[in-house]
Image (tube, rainbow, N blue to C red; front, side, top):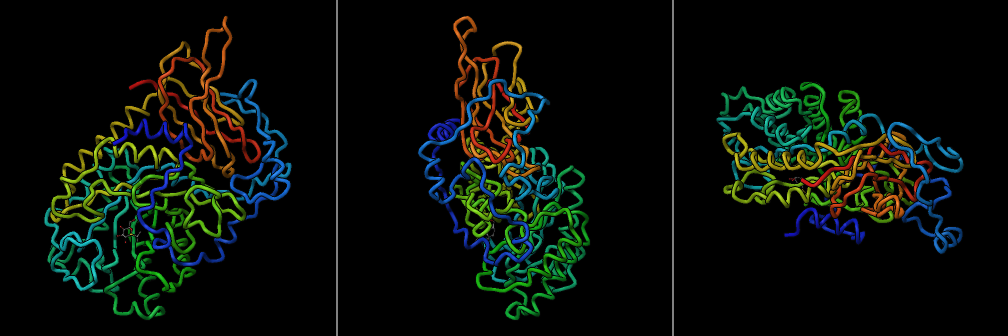
Length: 504
Ligand code: IPT
């Protein structure tokens, strides 16, 4: 298997377009975005720089022959010093495509744990059909504290639980159906996995979130959209009002093809009761799916994407108008066994190199990563999964914990100055997205050569989308000065930070 370093270098150097589509995006989201999404979209106003992927008109074709590239900055602004914004507002469309505070806060969470748990855990299936007997749900040693500690140790800042999967079994004692923990012998029918989960997460400083499947294969009323709407809204009201603030609500599109949910009412409940929670994938979503379940995000993972096809945006041609601010979440499993626990899951865990590669291509491509660890029939995570997740967290900390130097925020360019030449091997670059996505192309360079023989800027990495975060490795180089700048941007490029790291 190729190491994450070589993989990342390949991406950056060759500008390779990695296409790994393990599931059809259409299967993920089916509902039409309601009006409020349309309200959050805007049309690109012509800028002096052509948006990447825009269909070329005559004017743009001319520009393409003689591309207007910025020259490297003479004296890049570094540290907290910001360059005055040149010609702000001149024909640029800053102010459109702006993020909401909850989107920005969620992007800072970066890495989370996914927990698929329910009756499937006891049947060994990935999709239950709703006929499961609640009596099979007996996680006698259930300890959500163990799950949350595992998340914290791995460096995860949030965790998502399948409060209800497609089989309709509710992990909380809902008033809407008997198909829930109340009907199970576990804790004499008085248990509440959701309560344990949110409490344990908060105790560990991990933000909890919940998955509540729209598709319900148990609810007798499901074939009647009006009746099911009342049922589902009641479930969401319970989850959104009974368990404190949630980081995210997950709406999976599986099984819902062609079904008409009452999204305006659903969104009203969520927004009223959980104003800080981001909504995944359906209704009036704040965040989109990264288009596969491998955890490998596009090298051009734009944050502002084509509003008319945000569900299927992979990487190219995303900046055609109208656009919408919609950060991506990648999800994948730590074990090849599946989303739910299966016999032998602990023996099928992905290797550390593979997981690091996933991390580089999800968090390191500007997306959030949800890594699934599946609790077993005891209600515990497999130790092997806990340890592997901890090893991943440790590897990330070792690589990106202690920079040799850093700079930012700033506008236009950032420059890191080290007191003396040090062997550097990796970087973390972040865009300041608070005013929208501005960077259309970025470059990282190091100054090499002795001053008596003349210094030159040597290109270490480059790309198009920068977004929330970009992580990468480069061939080790001894240098004192490093700079990040944007040859193309929408208005002034707003950069949040540049950190340079040494060889491990
Ligand atoms: C969908 C599954 O139905 C669900 O079990 C869960 O695994 C989720 O994805 C995680 O991404 S699969 C969908 C791509 C059809």
